[in-house]
Amino acid sequence: MEAARGWDEEVMKWLAVAICLAMVGMAVMHSVSATKLGF
Image 1 (spheres, helix red, strand yellow):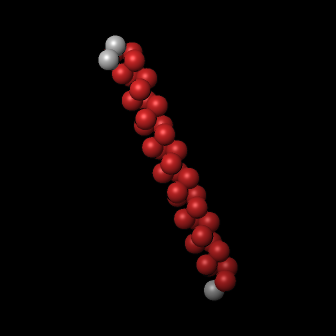
Image 2 (tube, rainbow, N blue to C red):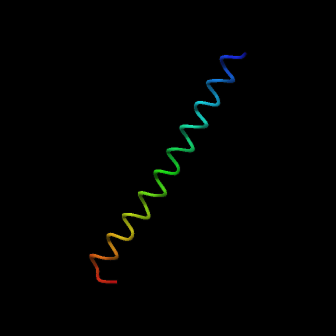
């Protein structure tokens, strides 16, 4: 049970990191495309 709980915490941590990276990546891509289009 202890191992399962630790694994669940690892998954949640990596999921949060992945979501943060995705949000940052989307913001960067949006600003880059906006700059290229001249907005």
